[in-house]
Length: 265
Image (cartoon, rainbow, N blue to C red; front, side):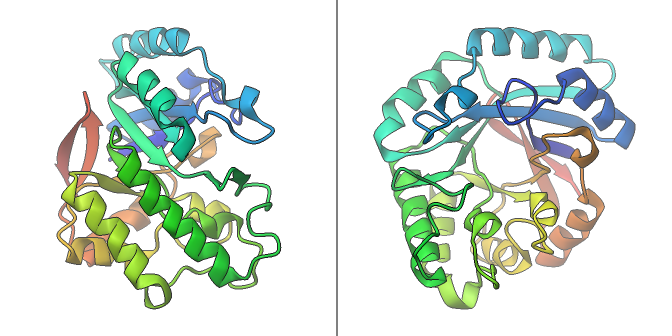
């Protein structure tokens, strides 16, 4: 299996040495690891944290790909935090480098941080979740230069509600619209196991949304840990494998040179 979403010390929210991450992935038995460090332009109060020297990043990742080629596949990627007003600037960076995979993620809604709880403050769960899903759909229609949508239900991770579930039965129209837009544009999704770290008791998205993606003829699905520390690389991938089989998938995908490569589960 491949871990398609890992952060190294190039991301301001991670201290993980890339070589430690690679050796951990190899020890765990993974076939490959994709580094997808952050590009989050105009991140409220943390812009400097997510400022990367992408020339250096690209150079280091290219070296690691060469140095470890006999042991494990290493891929150079990026996770783009999509906001409507930074589309052009973000796209310029993506186009400048030869990334293997580009993850599109929505970390900020209405210029307000999800992570610190600001976005959900003074909103009901229904108000917050609907606005988040509206923004996801808006952003993936505005920004086309990505390969998979990251943690489609990220709002669950940071919602300040007793019940943080995002149920298909409650938000099915919006979830369907997002999944259909992705599928029609040749984009995929990931199964992100960070949900377990945040006590959600499921990956992101959960089984019902994974199954719905398959029912809509979605085929491109990646296994991702979103690891920022070594112990979470490939986390619960055996569980995810069984979940994908149950949902009707027979292949997972990873990306090389921005093209999906399918591997039997």
